[in-house]
Length: 216
Image (cartoon, rainbow, N blue to C red; front, side, top):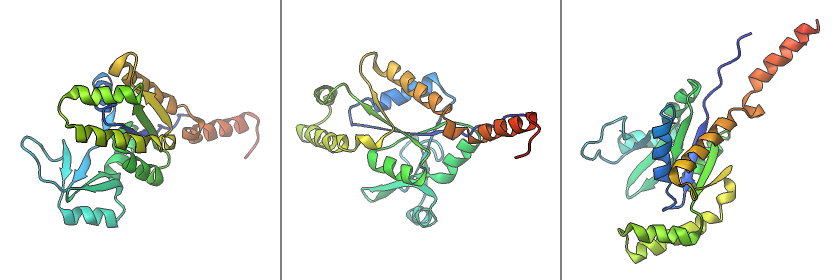
């Protein structure tokens, strides 16, 4: 009997500002291009060089609000008069095709995804310590003291909710490359969980009944 094709896994990646999650994501997708990266919908205007369906799906405010009303978004938020969100249908289509999809969003959005898509895997990337996080933020040399203090205060709030995540992934010894491979291993191991192989389990149960000459 041919085994069923397993659906892809939706992995949501979050982390403190300065944790290096963007670099980790770039390293992961470079080493494993088989992953799908979810494309967000936004109501802001395209910037120079951006294309619809590549950086974002660019839509009108009316269109976006219709998506909200029709429950077509896994998560969404509003920043500076513009909406940003994750289209449910786009993600679901890739998952149904067996492709693992990664969504890099902040904590509030991650919680929304988990409520609407309980089987999603939530991963939170951390630096080795808050002291190192502050060193990284200051090392950028691009932000004011006020901005740095604001990011550290936000990190303190986020630390209170880290237990909402399925995995805490440190970005420390070995750097972004090791962290990316650790993330890859987490996703691979999720495929072997019994809860994701119910149809396979039922197939084996059915075959054992046949071997015993029994009927279910």
